Length: 178
Image 1 (spheres, rainbow, N blue to C red):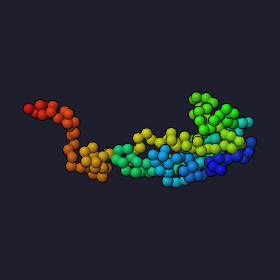
Image 2 (image 1 turned 45 degrees about the vertical axis):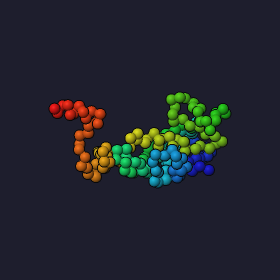
Image 3 (image 1 turned 120 degrees about the horizontal axis):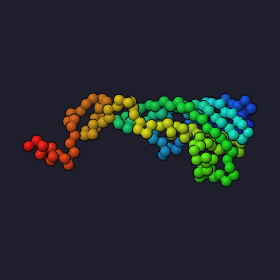
Image 4 (image 1 turned 60 degrees about the vertical axis):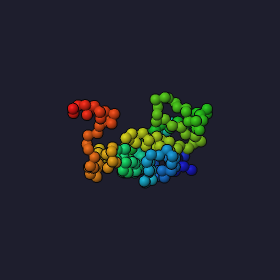
């Protein structure tokens, strides 16, 4: 049984408060990660049911370790994301292996349950992926690396000259000086 799943029968007319916790390996394949999840992933929230529709609103939290895109140093990124999702019974023609069926093209937060069991794993996976920065930075003021010697400019400046002249245009610089 997946740690991020619940039986549909557990949801009463008043709803259900839940707190689920699981390891990152249960959500992300090793080869798809450009980050390391350092702590267990925790999902807390409220589940409500209206006939066959199940609505979840809550928070997912964990701690990531990423590589800065400027200086290549690792840094920690705490995540605490407000998430919500609508769960519907899986259509009979739905192939979970293909997972191409969606109730509405614009409904990116619509998921499906089967056999009376709701799995929040896909919702958590999607929301963490959407929250990841496209260009991870250890800090906004990261100065990056020297393009010549590779010195981390956050740790100090190097002896390389500041002005970089493309070797293809160096001859133009010499003509300008004469």
